[in-house]
Length: 556
Image (cartoon, rainbow, N blue to C red; front, side, top):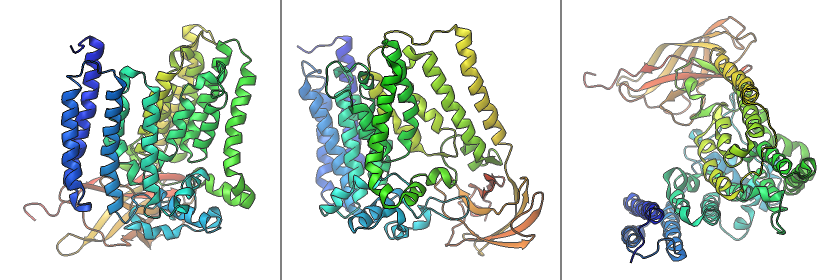
């Protein structure tokens, strides 16, 4: 007799979604058989397995049995492994410059060269076309140096040493994502374990990580860092808890800068947890910070000794050398023409104030926010000029692990009246809103399109003429791109100053002619486009008004 109580019904429904996702993964991969003929066998087999699993989960007596949980996770792993593995094996190029950089940096290290002093321009051979994948700087250049801590390529070195040379980063990212989901599977209570394979199969993750999404490399370590992190304060006679969280966090921070935003929250949380338990909060916090910093330093030490200045420039490059704004966060208002530009420095200040707001809220409402503070991190990353989708999505599985694995806070470490707590949170939040609002009325330039020159059929753009006025208080030299749709910045255009001069003085105007560096198709009929101007002094972006492309319609 099958059990049909509310809890079991919920579990059966959850696992049904997993088996449905296995089916849809097979269906989606069906048309890709030409990348690997083996998919002609694998895809119908996946569909059959998913259909059979969907039937079985509603007919077995006990859906909570470990066997069915493991079968569901195994089927999801096979689905992702075979379909995405076939995609990686069939590709010749990387899909992001960060993946290509990790590959080239690893090769440099294997051959005895310091990756931080080596040019990674050779990564262009691993990207096609390279101009569509570079990370551009506001000063008109693009990144050609290692811009991550050393763990980004150290974790890849063993695979390269063993002879794995074809898109090594993508294979490692796929394995790292599967490992993250295994940690999530073990951390979840039995009734919710269906969530792990469901996330494994989810398109934003399953398609991103094997296609250049290098965030996957730090996720398993960040998952371990937040799993039962509160046991660091009260280890319960375990040899694991006194070091696992801080050491894993140190490793995650050694791979990429994104986990750095979790460090203040975890340090505050450790201090608050110790205070709520009546322990010496300063001692616990100092030990935690020491282990995090010590692990980070140990991994990066060889490169600091090798050339400390080069390591510092590379690791801090995203903070020292402003990158062009990109992503799906608040900066979209400027990038897509809803606002005529934005001051990127003020967005960073607003993001810092949002982080302060989150930390203050954590202190004042610790019992309520202990489980959910990780969901606040994407809110911070939503504000700056670089707010890529992976910054906003990748913390979700980690936040779930933190939410389900910690114990309830024994008591509030800080007690204040409700109105005082509300006021203390409202002050930095109001500051963030004010600064962010000011940022969007502080565009450095006014940009107006005067003329567009095309070929006779209007299918190719030959040049764009602009009127540019400097509204900033300092002289500046802008660099320009054409933006069609919401894709990644695709390279600076060649700039001819027809009248006026660069640097453009405050209040001065210039007529600028832009010519594409590479062959550029015109936008489709009635598609909106605009010209984006980037300046490094001041750090900002300015756009022309969005315009619909008038050619190519039924009457043209």
